[in-house]
Length: 179
Ligand code: NI
Image: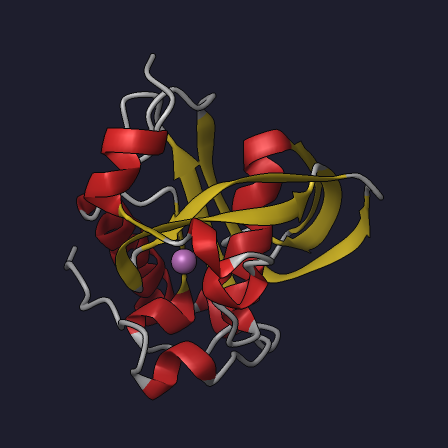
């Protein structure tokens, strides 16, 4: 496996969006290796999610995984590794909740982003099998964040109040909930 280079805000890949995968693309060994590399890159960077455009690949695919020991997002419930190809949100709560968010492509910042508290997403797993899952809370938040990347959006675009934008160090000093 290989650690891929992460595109940061300003690289055109972050704003370019992504195309759906076509049938059978997921069967190639090269594609499966790319998925493994994406997951490896996410874990190496202590990410809780990563979308293909963040590693310069304009395809509709995301990986999400939360380990409760994650130093960037401590104290969140664990989410097993979830890979979604061509994901679509098919329904969501009317209720939104604001919470802190960061992004590996916008390093060293946190800001408060409103997100739907629950949603249903449809897509394919890494072998092209259709999956549908319901997510709540932090899982729903991470899904919305990652799917935004597929449309060339980052969390900064969703900040209703720019005054919440905070450097990570100051976030940890003044705003992070202490366990
Ligand atoms: Ni991100």
